[in-house]
Image (cartoon, rainbow, N blue to C red; front, side, top):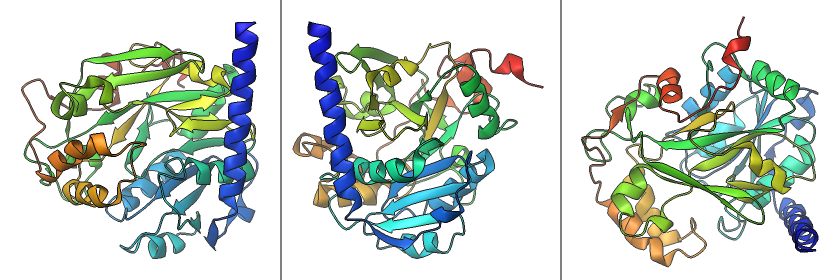
Length: 341
């Protein structure tokens, strides 16, 4: 009876979130709708952005190289030219959302509408503009090969760990220019410790640890950022993201990733949060209060970032490539590498 009641509640939760997405979609204003060019089998990328000109060129180039055929992006009232830049990209469909980011479930209502309308039946990458997805052999085998492998294995999604990258010096001082790869601008990361727990009834995972917990939440690790995500999903219009891309409904989708140490094929989201604009963005967040359900307890976190601290310590590890992350257990390969030509 308990299991039946829990399943019933999760179905209603999913329907409620799908209904929210339908309503949110009515508030999106199309600026450049090129979705008529989407073909069956295309891999699609979905994102919500605001003032991301520092990251967008590398973001688009990375996912194009991986094999994304079309980008469906919501711009939340950018003021730095992001919207004009994206309108000029032939593979980008762009919508404007003028409402509050927090009120839209951090963009998930807007993206939920687009995923429902355009993502059904496609493999979809849903990420932030500061997240670059990599996986074992990503530099040799693109997403079409990866999703074919996942289809053959009967897997509807692939999980990934968000890995915060940072410079050796103070925040605001990248180690290479803006044209350099993200891993040269921010070449350091925390290899450990990380911990992952399963939370009923959705069976969602919560993965915590890493540099932000070490530096900003040493006395309150439960407030540290959630680092597990499900960024790559064969979409069905009955699917819905619950908490950003950290968890989904139906609950079985959350079982596709158990965090570091999971031997199944998984990825890493290289996280470019700490590029040179991080202090300015934190100062803006102190004014806007849009990135947490309850922003007040996180004000000291954003205040600390505005002071451009040094995140590097003696345990920091320099990024060397995907094989290094595989050896560290931060991503898994399953039998993916054994199938390489």
